[in-house]
Length: 189
Image 1 (cartoon, rainbow, N blue to C red):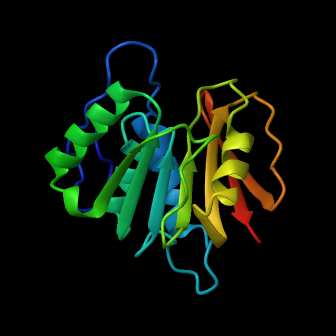
Image 2: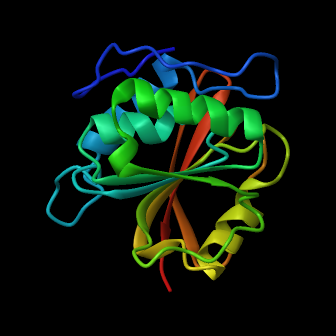
């Protein structure tokens, strides 16, 4: 597993051993970020990655958030409930020299701590497939102040998994890459 593009292009990332963490494949991550950079998700047509405040929930390895940093995001918060995942993310952050721009939270995204002073403008949620945790986590994160009005949120689910957007979120696109399906949503308060 590696960073696909940007200033850290080609740099390797660690992943925890075992099957508890299922990192998004390099191919799917590259497809997702190409969509973000060229999909016209902002009013002025620029990439939503530039200077973004990013939340990577169910972060696992931190690959989605670290890819965003590599491609121009300003700051990143990674949230995962597993201590092993947090340790791997911390190692990946150190390897990339990004300690100053990354905050780690060992927390359950469905019961997050109070949000930061500046909520995220871009959120990635990659819960375990078929867990049904994506929508409850989005709702909880929004309720606790983690998600800014107008934020772009991407939830990764298994390709055939049902997903219904929670209140305040509007789904406007979906893309499939192998076993993964990315659901694109916009949050409005």
